[in-house]
Amino acid sequence: MLGNTSSFSETIEFRSFLTDMDLIDLPVLGRKFTWVHPNGISISRIDRVLVSNDWLSFVCKPDVVDIASHEKLKGLKATIKSWHRETYGVLDDKILKLISEISVLDIKGELTGLSEHETGRRKQLFSGMWHLKRSKESSIVQRSRARWLKEGDTNSSFFHACVKSRRNRNSILALRTKQGWIESPIDIRRAVVSFFRNHFSSVEWQRPNLDGISFSTLSLEENQMLTSPFQLEEIENVIVESDGNKSPGPDGFNFAFVKSFWNLFKGEVRLLFDQFHGTARLPQSFSSYFVMIIPKIRSPSSLGDFRPISLLGCLYKIIAKVLTTRLARVMNRLVEPTQSAFLKGRNLVDG
Picture 1 (cartoon, rainbow, N blue to C red):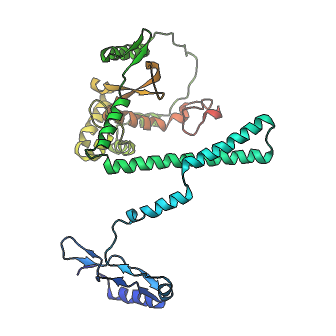
Picture 2 (picture 1 turned 120 degrees about the vertical axis):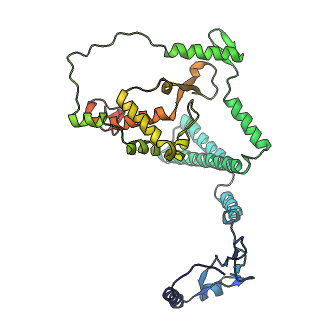
């Protein structure tokens, strides 16, 4: 029998406390111990309950069984379901009932107008309806996650249905162009490339002349801060704050990989930063990226319904984030107070 060790004085002090509080150990039905280690040597009683004599005489059958429950949340499932039925009932029926009451008030408002009490009642109904809708959405999300945890990685029909559904969502089966609808994969690829090449092609335009306009300038200390050699600490801070679940770029690595193996190649990254600081140039491969198009609406039909995003490599992002962090320290001094957007602490409504 193995267990936690404690000093003799601590044991005496604890026993005195139990005596003073008139507490006793809840009796156990069956064996003396409730847990056995897989090695078959270590045994312990890990579930202990201290109660008073009054409580013991009041509660019926308070005994603790000799098998410790390691599935306590699972045991609550039936109770939680019962509570959910009593508290929320059938959400769809309750939502429809509230919508019906709101419709009655709306019709009355169109005909004769609503009193102050009825207007307040309508607001309460709307608030209740949206509360139930949010509860329903939350319940759906929780059930979907629970099912995914249970069946997501198994070779089941549910898993294959999820894969098929995702493939269909990520596929463009047809597009509407100026020439009409196209369905051939080759024609769709050509249309996508042509559309975004024209969309992002540079157009020459006459830039405004800024001669004679004075701008805010940085101090010598601020300039030295911006141009000083990069420190490993500021690089690591950027990596820690980056989201590890973002989609990877052409190199196939995301920040989760960088964080996990940072100690392995942080020396190489530091060398890259030193070279960039000395030459002010990056390898051409750093500007390579994947362009993904994300639907802006539920059922996109033309390329104007898609928004392009670029998936850059992690090293490019690290350099960009470090430079941005440095610039953020001086931007409030450089930007005039009349500009109210895109600055920390300023809002569009402040302009």
